[in-house]
Image (cartoon, rainbow, N blue to C red; front, side, top):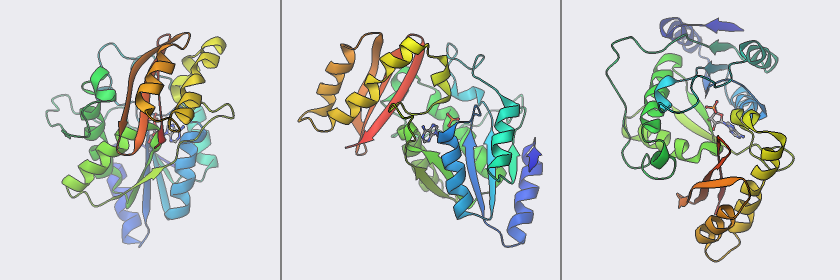
Length: 256
Ligand code: AMP
């Protein structure tokens, strides 16, 4: 498995694969890899000759008061998981931004509402870094989890609008046995908070059976102990919610 630390080296490697007639799948991540990420990797492994996983905690998608500094970075474990999964290259750059970086990708419809209300610069950072990663790994296909439903919507729109030659492959949400969607941020939860957080997946599943899922879910979550509702919204055929459990923000969604 190659560990690539800059964009030019990654482009060179990917071009050499393409010249040999091989297809390339990209799985963009921020590391702290878990079974959710690895399901994306397995899907990519089945559909492509070569698989690239990018591990990059992208500073431009974090707000000034968010957890960029404390975001987990277990590099050695991440690399071991990638190696075991048959990944061909891990793109793990120190930075992707020149010091005088001044160009942004801004999607202006899907990036409104939901997570953008409390994270106003988030999707500008996501769209920008994803386009940079696509231009770096030059994949035929790129894999994104439905856990971040709005992210999928933003990326699909960006790729369509800007004619980016890649197929976006959304992958279903991977959950723990108790129903909680796997997330690198779950490790911030105390055992008690983790118990409290379970109402999020459980009530989402119940809400879609109700006549007014959004209002019902908002009511249930706002009464849940230890939880503060960030938003409940339906968008593009999914019922989406974000909550705070202590200082940890969790998101989840289900198909309506
Ligand atoms: P992150 O490292 O949090 O940026 O996530 C990298 C990719 O993995 C994103 O496309 C996420 O949507 C996806 N992902 C994270 N957790 C899960 C999960 N539980 N199920 C499916 N995909 C996930």
